[in-house]
Length: 192
Ligand code: NAP
Image 1: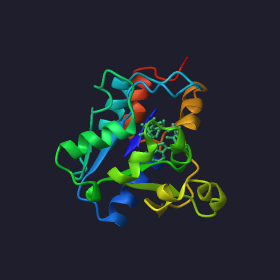
Image 2: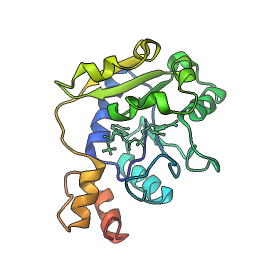
Image 3: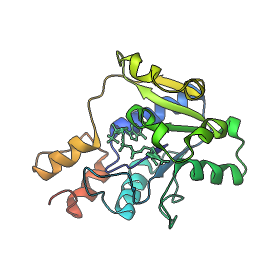
């Protein structure tokens, strides 16, 4: 499961768990992005903080782990390289699923070597009930053919909203796991 996770929240965890159950996945590996070159709208929190929060959010769940694969990469991180690295480690493309948000998937045609991605994995994304299918229809057919959807209950929560609430001093309790809330507060993240 790939994402910036700035910060990780219950929406991500819910989508991850639904995907794990629906696809009967043996393992779920969270892959926080490195310093993403494509982020322009806000300064992304350091990858070590995002990695730490992802560890705290997933600790104790047997099937979950967190990978440093993109954080430790010195160059710009591209999903295609991450998938290739998992395949090199012995995972067959037919057993590899890349789970991420729908808005991210909708921009896939701008990703580095995106044409190769459907050969390397099955794409999985969470679709909220009632999401307009026309947007998805605009994706090339070879992408749509390798796209699986999981339906998650309406859950209006986003990292952007959580950062804003933290900045404004409004609470973030029950939007993120308790240890992530403590981490954000004690490290003064998103305050300025
Ligand atoms: P983003 O633009 O920050 O997020 C787009 C939308 O998807 C947001 O609504 C976001 O919600 C949601 N989202 C992101 N990750 C999610 C997840 N794991 N589960 C559910 N919703 C999720 O996207 P991003 O985080 O930068 O990128 C997502 C993934 O696409 C990453 O793995 C990234 O490496 C990959 N990507 C690759 C390339 C490339 O190869 N060139 C380019 C762009 C993205 P929140 O804000 O609440 O998370």
